[in-house]
Length: 319
Image (cartoon, rainbow, N blue to C red; front, side, top):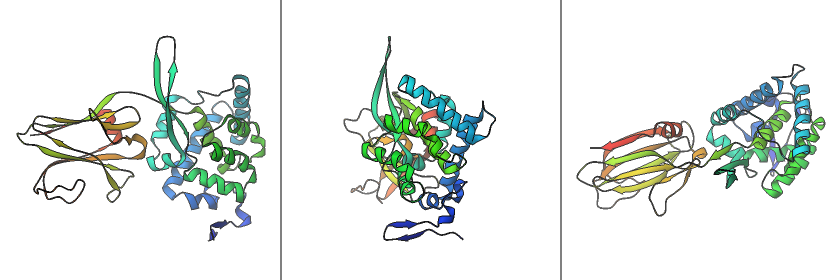
């Protein structure tokens, strides 16, 4: 059995596994990601392998090398690389990841706008989360198993984003990486996904409505769950008092959920939770503790995944 020995913050890796061929054989990755996350990362590699070999039959390493040359040529000619992947296919792959893992690799940065001759479109662009576990993993690898990675990791850590130098460096120097090694193909995979940068368009949609049609006021609590299997991993997201014949509306702008019409509302990011639980009740106590153990007469409890709320826009009516 191969072991990772941790001493005074240093990870010591046996020399015989430093040049692993499969992702599973890399002991560092097991230190930073669990088995379920490993499966997700492996699925990203398979996705990218299929992409680079769809018009090439010389083996994935050679095909990726040629593909990197092609992207580098585009970068040098146009100063940018875009539309690497089919948008629908890439969105499907990214949506299949757990939000927890997604947020350890990427985040959606500041809002940007694209101006055309007849419109202005606002959107959020995906970028590296350099404070996440993925970059921690690359940083450790750059000191222990592959010092070449320092030239990739350190500029990103310094700037907090993918610089043009990072883009060019990895593509132009692909011959310095063993592309038969799945760890290196994972780096190229995530690099190209980040480079393509799925853009989230700004929208204005009401995605959940809770209507109080009773003669009395009721209370509402909405809990968010940050991971699958979640029972003990939830946090309060929204709360409100609904007078008779009034509604609570949850609005979605493409990236964040918030309470419609509120002067100040929490903003709950789409990619940092799996779903919501809605609880509507009448308090049986004069003292109400929000998200607490207030004695209550529960009138409704409904649970929705993020995808269900976005696609179905459910309405809960309290009668």
